Length: 381
Image 1 (cartoon, rainbow, N blue to C red):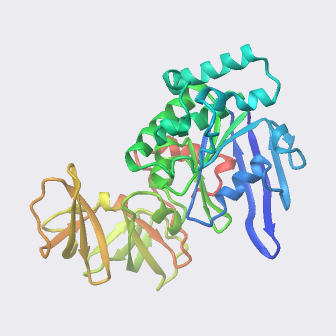
Image 2 (image 1 turned 135 degrees about the vertical axis):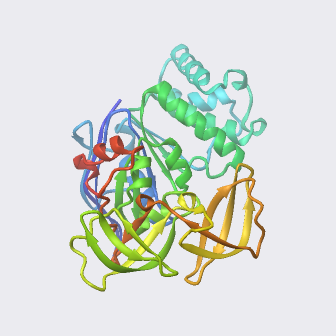
Image 3 (image 1 turned 90 degrees about the vertical axis):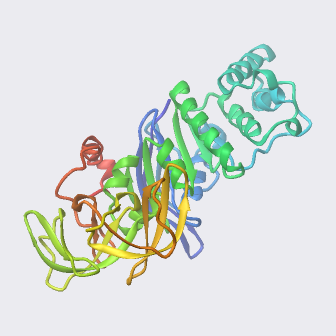
């Protein structure tokens, strides 16, 4: 397939700076996901790679060749959009093979390419149908098939699942992951849904305001977020944050006073912290555990029972936190509960939002963390 490099890529619309100097390396056969809130620039960046938007500054290279002045049709890419954009009067077979017909590919070869793509996408029995006779998921597979038949060097996906209902999105996530394995292709995927990013990506690029906040594998970003934004964006339910009081630091970590007065030493590097430093503690809901002797407490305001797990929304003096507990707990709204966490699960953030570097590696992510020190992932702590 192909590699992609972005070197200090900038995009400006008049006085508006949309992409503010992005550096990125996508390796051959990687599945890379751009994720971030609406307006962060992820779709604009994808369109720049595709050649649908010009580059104000910087370089875009595919297989080492500069592509800034090369038109979309000559870049050897294929893009799947949020809208299916199928021709309603054409059959599935004709929709999938239309670009090949325009390119002058002989009918026999064209038919074989369509059949090969249909087999991969499990559309063999639908080739004679028209779009109105297809479900949403089937239409999206046809749109993907239209890209596959072109045999592109890189696949580009711009929020392709956002028009589907929840069940179909889950199904299509599985199918896209399977498709990536079967095609052994380089893929770049844009979404605002961090669950899609976590479940499909080899590497995630987190964007905010046209800036890359962090690059890394899903679990590296989950366990070692570079800053408060990444910590709060990656993971569902979102991370809890609470102000804590700095006490001291040593080789074993930073000692902080929790809400309620208890002390806890978080194993992070606090060697450059000054007295009176303003710190915020971050704890993921699934890392909080109900315990009668827990150092934190609050009153349950809302309970969400999800079967295997139950989410408790607990009101503390500082604000609301979420605790993910066992699905069979018998607590009810209004109960006062105590809870705690293992210190290595804690994250500490400065007042500028940057995370203090962990002194120990999570046992499940030692390999991820080592890989995340590559030059292209230099945004990771």
